[in-house]
Amino acid sequence: MTVSDIKGGEKMKGKIRLTTLCYILGIFWIYKFECLLYVDRLFAVFYLGLSLLQLFIAIYLLQGNEYKIGGYDKLIIAFCVLMTAINIINKTSYTHCLKEVIRILLMWSTVKIGVTSDGGKFFKWAYKISLACTVLNTISAIIFPNSMYVDAMGAASVFLLGGDNATIRLYILSIMFGVLYNFYHRKKYKIPVFAIFNLILFAFLRDIATAKLMAVIIVAFLLILEVKDIKFLTPTFSIIFNAFIFFTVVIMQSISNFYVNIFEALGRNATLTYRTTLWSISFKWILERPWFGYGYLDDDSFNFMVKERTTTGLFNTGNPHNTYLTLLLAGGIVLLAFFIFILIRTSRMSRECPILITNVLSGFLTTLMLHAQVEGRDQAFILLICCVIYYVSKIKDELPIINKKRLKLFE
Image 1 (cartoon, rainbow, N blue to C red):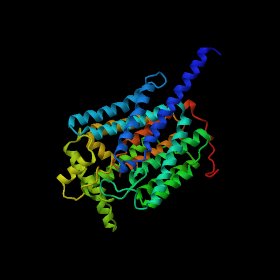
Image 2 (cartoon, rainbow, N blue to C red):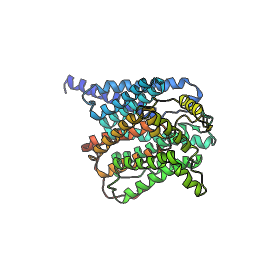
Image 3 (cartoon, rainbow, N blue to C red):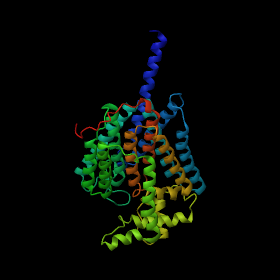
């Protein structure tokens, strides 16, 4: 062995350690303990510093040949540039937009570098960190049944990982990482039962209907995949299905109130804790500025618009509680169309994956996109799953061979 070989080995080990540090920082940031922000606002500076450190390492790594910036990467970056440009056009506060840009870039670079460098190791870290954090979040709901903290709008819903509705997307990701962990390390299709139970327990502790629905959908498609592959379960299905839901539930409700009328005829309240009212208000505003929207609005700006222009009394909602309406408000048809274009590009690339992996990832994409129908800030997390689909497809030749025979659930 020559001296140059030794130096080359040391350099490779150093690079591997830096790569691992990069995506571990990214995973920890995604699952950050937002409860700390209610202890002291200085923790916001800490988390911002953590995200900037990860991005700095990512930029350094992306300059090399191993992690070349490709066409898909440019789409994600262009989406962030478009968001910023629209904010400049609308002369809206840059703080909220900058936070969203950093969040998207951090999640994209975490997945790109993690999957490209060593998918098995990345999904192992992602699953173990995500499961640990979500279990701690559930424990916090047991210890503090009402909440650890009251959020800025007065709602008693803040636990270890933040607001209870917003944390559901983190539980969904933890289950997805669990399935991928089993793919890589156990070389088989195995449902992460404990991660699913963790979501169900939190849903019942907080009595969150959305979380229960998400759990039912996840369990349903994972159990079906125990028996057979689903040919239509692709990212294309996710797009079409959610477009249908968005049109029938959000748009038609905003136009005619037919959704509420149907349920009230059955003796039930269908406002979804006043979400339908927010959707109607937001849809009217979107029609006023359909192409470029209003720029990214922070909680105070959105609440001010609601208070100034309506008499509903819904003054502390922070956002429309629908991610697609949030995108339309932020950047109009232009921004939403670009977002959909990324989804379509993801769908085309997913054809390169084995059908079982395509089914699993598409199922989680569908579920999170459904969650986005009732929560206003899921776009970055949807893009995270899109990145997982794309980069796993790129390394299809390195994927482990999965036993096609379906295995018993608790095997």
